[in-house]
Image (tube, rainbow, N blue to C red):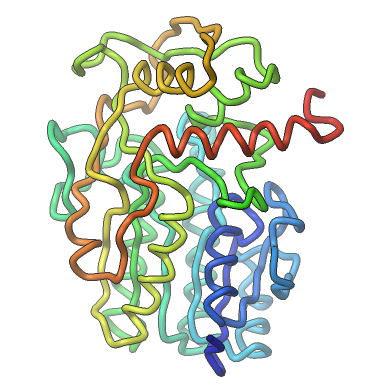
Length: 336
């Protein structure tokens, strides 16, 4: 289906999540314009000849020009820094990349009267005071600069929407893994910090071992518990959120997860079962910024949006991730 005159701007569209969203948008008929500085993204992650503008989303002049030239009607914002321990070590860099650049982008959005905005937010906005699954009404009390930066972005969006025709969706991700079903794109980060990605790198021999950071948390087996969501389901949630806004839906912040948690030890065991052999693992100290438990209460997303998960199965997520990692391992330079 071609959506005539439906031009959307995607910042960070050459990255892991952004590229999967671009794929969904293009295959649904949108004209997709990508702005990416390629600091962590890859040109070949764009599968459908999406228009690529190399640049930074914090360049207000560039953003205004792109929005005007392509008659952009919606912005989906993925550009930013995402590593929690790094945000603790480099807080000002995170506030610059995730807040100052978003502010410049929103100034361009206001100037060009963009209709809709979708923010890549995070479950990190909730903090560590939650003992059960987290709904969207839970207290937001982030404990590190990354989570704080995402919450500030949400606040800025909300305040702008209050004085303009803009409507927005802030999608709060839980832990993302997996790859495109046909293995066209996947997680190709040079620096891997996600558990399933790291486990798959151990499985292919890129890493010697996987570290379990802490086993003294207040969880059933002492290791951190997380809700894992497949990247394709997450990408489809962005498309569903955009369609919801286009139909006149109100602005919202919404969780995207499966309402099910797995501990680090359970995930490592599941990878071993899929692989058919044990992984070399070690016990490490707690990492700064890690909370004990983050599980999405995800009724809202299924009630308001035209979205239902297709890959709500940990082993399916791991199989997808492992298949992608094996594909990467076959390329020159993988082990360097």
